[in-house]
Structure formats: C-alpha cells, structure tokens
Image (cartoon, rainbow, N blue to C red; front, side, top):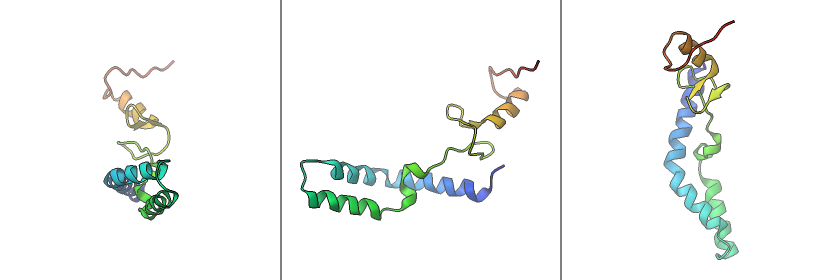
Length: 101
C-alpha cells in the first residue's frame, strides 16, 4: 500500500487540474494564436505561468485504484499488476484465469 499522503496529493492534483482545465486551455489557445500581437501572446504566457503548478495535467500520476501503487499500472483496468494478480487469484476479475505450470 502506498503512502496515504502521496495518494491524497495525487487526488488533489486531479481535482485542481479539472478545476483549471478550461482556463488553461483558453490561455494556451491565445498564446498559440499567430494572428494576435506578440504582447498579447506574451501576456497569455505570463498568466499561464501564474496558475498553480498542480493544476497542470502533466503532474498527475497514474496510480492503482486498489493499492495506490504508482508503477506497473494498467490504464485499461486502472490497477497495478500486483493487485490484478491478487484479485485474479481470488476469482474477482471476470474472464481472468491465473495460469501456473
């Protein structure tokens, strides 16, 4: 199990990224617009830099929903490889059969 503080920090980042997503997208659109003046584009970049760092979606870490583990993560299942193996062994994942030879 991952540290609770790391899991909560990541939840906070997800919430903040969703909160600022629209504002961030608008500022990026203005900053990339070639038809606007250089000053307007620069102002948009400055406002983008003033937004909280944790509002950037790049800072979000994919974590296992079961254990909070950050590595060995399957996006489709939102689970780590270890949690998937444990649940598969218990017969909790439909269609998954653990093989051993």
